[in-house]
Image 1: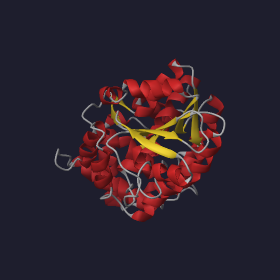
Image 2: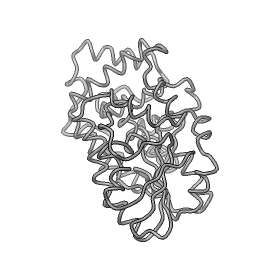
Image 3: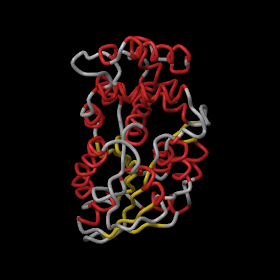
Length: 320
């Protein structure tokens, strides 16, 4: 999947099918920034945290329940498939629509969206880093031909996107990498469900632009240094992933609190939750939903679980 994306960055004139693969893949990479680059869950709210990824939404005038699922955007395929229990399958089967953070539904949207991958105002990576740091980036690029993008693209691509692209090296299953969205989307389509996204691609990239490029470049350097010296002990993402696979939401909440600064948590997490909530409420007036968003969006005072409760809904964790 990653190779398809990189090939299309090289040549934006590739086929429509490849274009779909590009946007689908970049979308998952953009979303993952909220977890592996600069996310920190806020302090625990009064909403009970249950060791599960699946939550039922009811009350507030709803005649049928909807569901909220804590997704993961970088995971081994076998682990992703293993988290799709009969309860998840039944929940997807019972709703009208499956809703992700972003969903690109046609080639016209995809062609337009590609222009948002680069830094704005002609900012270049070599303007943000020292010559020694650029050498580190270039050396990593040269030592990892599987990245596959043209060398000049590194200088213009949003640093957070490039950082997310190389995050696949954090997993032991380099050729079997997936994300929960692909697995859930397949189930939705098999059950003839409408598939949608609560944000546009442009809006999602806008949140990344809210993080200064200098900070993005700093995070990219930290990621490359980590990958150049990766061990089982310092691979914190893999440790977090194991908790995710175990659906240990209580420990996940605690671990992610040790992440980056509150300021970037608000940009990546809280502000999106606040923007999404009115849209979810509007959708729920006319249809039932299976909502799948990054699990870091679920918890805390401004997490979706608590926001649904504040808006009059009942939210119950379902042992998955």
